[in-house]
Amino acid sequence: MKLFALMKKEFLRFFRDPRLILTMLLPGILIYIIYSVMGGVMNAPEKETYEYRAYVSGSSAVVEPLIQTAVGTEGWEFLRAEDVDAAKAEVKDGKAAALVVFSENFDERVAAYTPASGGPAPQVEIYYRSADGESSSFYALVTAVLDGYENALSNKFDVNAGSGYDFSDAGRVLLSIMGNVLPFIVIALIFSSCMGVTLEAVAGEKERGTLSTILVTSVRRSDVALGKVLPLSCISLIGAVSSFLGIALSLPKLMGISFGDFAAGFGFAGYSLLFLLIVSIVPLIVAGVSAVSAYAKSVKEASAYTSVVMIVVMLLSLASSFVSGIGDWIVVVPILNAVVAMQAAIAGAPVVWTSLTSVALNLVYTALLVLLIAKMLSSEKIMFGK
Image (cartoon, rainbow, N blue to C red; front, side, top):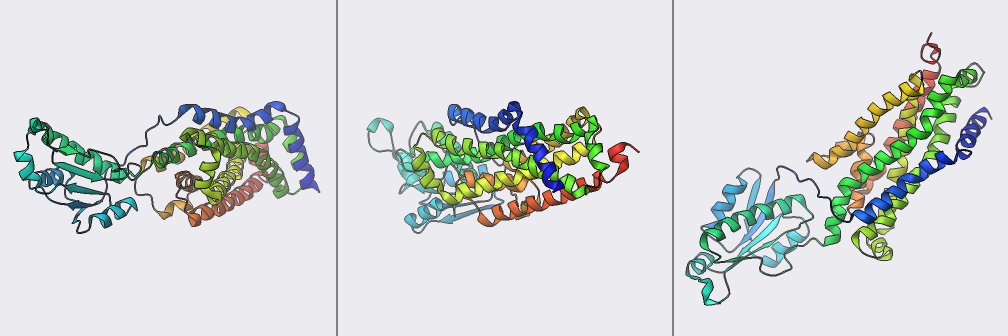
């Protein structure tokens, strides 16, 4: 009963303050406004090095050595495409970086071709996926080599003179970009919301002495810890739900399609995993901020400590966008595991086991933090400065 009384006190404190309610609703509103207005103006960061697997159909004794010199030899696998259609299918499915097709007798036709003749120029076709960093990087390297060679010859051949070479649709490219950027904004807004309700509830009561009054009673320290973390997490979930709705409603506008069409492509599973990942972060952040607040002597001191924690969290949420080759080990890192899983879900390629494991581990970390808070509440040195 004492636990429920503590939880009731926190809920009443929140719902009697309209400013706190507005703080919880702001994340979703801001996400919706920002991404409905911005469109696709952001560029996804590119990896520095890749291991390419590319197909080549036809041949050019002049161009192929230039390409291999430009991209280097390590990590590359050039394969001759015996079946062009099969090679295209592998590129489209992500099994190969690209397919380069030289027209028949390319070098001889380039040497004999004159633009003034008006006939069709020899052509190089490059099939790739612009939404994939590896494939788009390969395409950029090869086109740079071909442009340099073509300029030296005064426009004696064409590169991708037509359409249908990019196997990534515009929507998938945009979702890939959003997958890198959006989780960072979600984490930042949720963290700010959690700070708004948690600092005053823990450090504020400690500074005013009301927390000490509770601690001198017979109530269990674990009940006090749960009486803070549970209601504050439930309150902060309003911000999480608001953020989720902001994402769900803004992405279709960002892509210029109806919500129904987007929902059909994104799927119920994608929405469910995204929602669970956002929700799993909230109690973890609340518990972390509560632990810092319990250690601090005042709201001002707790705010300073929490600002440092927030910077670390922001760095974690950005890390996956700039670090290449992140493996499955990331699932054990709190918050970063959810960020990586969110990126995959928003990009339309969710990994179910990674997402569910991230949710479960974040809840485990939350439980461990609650135990830590209970231990801190039992320490007279931390609570009373003795």
